[in-house]
Length: 143
Image (cartoon, rainbow, N blue to C red; front, side, top):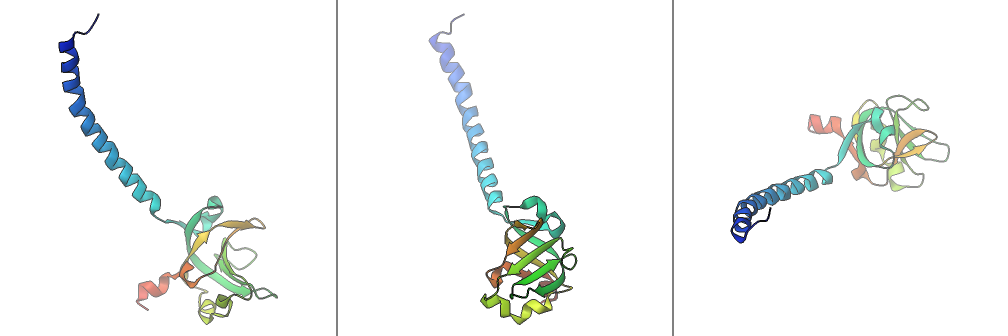
């Protein structure tokens, strides 16, 4: 069966307005998906091992803050080293390694932002800037 010229025009008249609406809806959906992709993923410290290689914010209770003999500072989440669920670390010699506020973190709920790496099977984030640490307890208390 062949379509005559009149049938083709009728088909286009039905299809084109419907296609415009479809493309408009698809365009809006793509804009929304793009916005969601820009948001920072926030995870619990106990979930960090599942996000190795990802840039996230890790939230949790600081169990301890320790320094290695060489001066690297570790912010251990959950429990003390070596049983921590996650750690943020500040390299020895960094300006941040002498920040007195770091010693006040045990017992507080904080967030650390960065790319998660594994070290000896434990997830960790290298901290190079104070902006990577969010003290959630202070934010709640208005301090």
